[in-house]
Image (cartoon, rainbow, N blue to C red; front, side, top):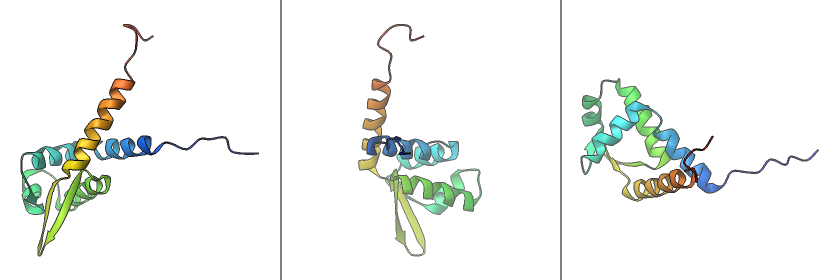
Length: 109
């Protein structure tokens, strides 16, 4: 028997990656912190948030893997900042997603 399951579109996969990265309050706090600065070092982020260094590292990795932030090694430190291009892309994708999902009538159900 053939599998009739269709693949997700690249757009659906990308917006899901962004959504997953945004799906934890610590990551939102990190993004809020970085959005107020041009860049900052890992230690600055760790001092700002009430979570362990290892946990901050895991959250930074998720955000970086999703492309929402970027990091640059300046031995012995790592400097992070918002990835402005992907930030704009995420905003456009979410805007379109929420706009497309709006009901056409006053009452959906």
